[in-house]
Length: 178
Length: 355
Image (cartoon, chains in turn purple, red):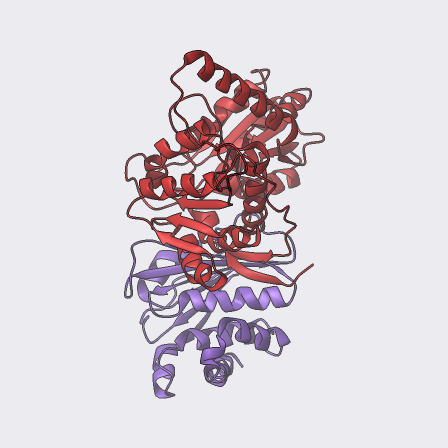
């Protein structure tokens, strides 16, 4: 099986980090993975996106043009990528920052007010991990030991205190899918 | 097999260089290869090596010349416009028969161009890049694992043949992260009796020089050098064949273009189209033999490139134009899509392989 993810949002929302977490999770589960960021003159507040592929087979092109899963963390991202999602795919979106509905009716939509939730719970920078929690729950992967291992990989020892906070954010997101 | 780690292609090059025993890095930042320099800046001081951000690309390549003269494994890295600046130094390295590793993580050109991925420095790399008769060994990785492996190989080949190896990657290969195993086999640098390491009053002076004002001598240097190049062509040509056994349509692609093409080939095979790929891993020496051999069953070649069509000339030369070769390309920082390649494969197939 191959799942292609596209993460998109503002720079600073943790788009690349979220993608990296999923790539590491795939790696610890002995899947083939690739992670490709958009790179460019964008700074904080500009657009950021990354392609992540997790597969049982060798990854061909690392570029995701038609994602199975779109994670849209702001309106420009949904506007730009909504039509590219494969039919039957899933769109996870931050409904705090995206006030409109998804127009398509052939995709699954999980809308979570991630930014508001993150602020209310005292970890304003973790809207990304709230959405990650929802993704894992949706695909039945939340219990996997890969989660723990992958968190250990993407959070440096220096910030080990953030481990529990990240897990809490993920649980919040998972709760929205249940 | 060691544990795999996720690394950017640029970081994998830097780490592999350290594993290969490179302790001298000189560079000047430029997108999309800056992570190479950043990694070196962080690691070199901790392991007793030298990281130096030069005042320019030209300064950096001449520092490489200096350290190579002393016999140490040394490298620099840059991206397209920066490589052009290094052109003079590349020619001098060749003229002085010095081993070095140069990395080009290409971006769109010409001129300052853009910062998105490209393969449009193919001519520059495979034809030498600077003035005079010379070649570099040009290695084209198509995965982060190969970024690491070919970096080690690049140092080894440079030492073996006393010439420059170039890693010719692109922005995608540099920026993407993939799992990489770093338990790399490394041949340590050989003895370099020609190096300028001090005579200790025990031998004649070694002289490293690319100036030679006696034409008879300079001619001999050129002929001798090309004898070495012949050995490189005989022994070091590398490529990968994918589904070529029964292929009637053959994709020629390297680096990221080969990755994209693989998707298209897999889809076309599901449609019953006999298509395969020859992926050059060394761009110089170009894998002429497998291309020529494939003309026995291939009716149509498709060169997939992130350029206006450069490698296609080598494909035509290698296949001696026994079958037509068409181009599928994007340029200026754009990347061909698998669909674009698939469409070209279908079209070639409709023509019975004859375009």
